[in-house]
Length: 260
Image (tube, rainbow, N blue to C red; front, side, top):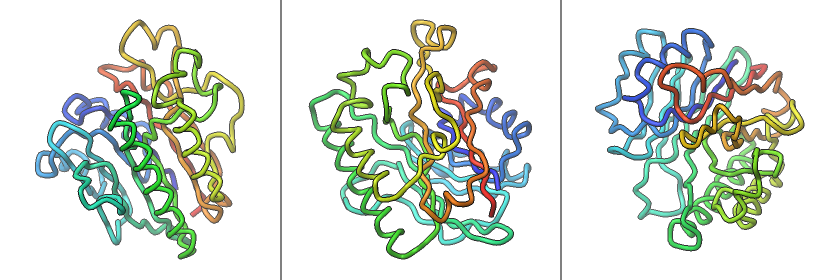
């Protein structure tokens, strides 16, 4: 089963690029971030005519997550538990059943957190605590799951072309990376690093200062797999070439192939 995550940075802006990538890459499931659309404004028919079931958790002009799946989606839930006052659309869950096994999909758009210090950074760290609590629940339930999306976290220096320029940024602050390690240390596997080591593997290039042409990127889009799901990992790749296409997002798709 091929499952992808892709921060599209606006469904309206990616109305041609996203379907073109789907037609070429043919993923079974896609977790989308930053759809920047209310649910009723999401152009589901474009994807339904390609055989995808569509579930969204939208928000006007900001944030928003969605799942596209060629397989039926069960037990869909929206929003991350732990803060009843949190109205930002950043999290969606559903179960998808493969030929042999089912997996719980947790699609997320983790807060950016800048500027530091400040309430946005406090919100980011608290959100990560809530995500870790959800992962703990799923592990205790022995539910096979993966958590994928735009984490807005640069885990290691090798995940940035110029790590020194990110030292004071919320994506690379020690507190942010410590929260990441606390999550991973529950027993989760960073799928990409389980398959590929070394620098110069990025999933985001800013639109400014010629970042794409200079390969001045960062790796912030991740798959974290529970042990059961990690045992079924066959591959994980970054579709870097998508960034060079027409009207690209500043992110590119990352995908896993699972033996399900």
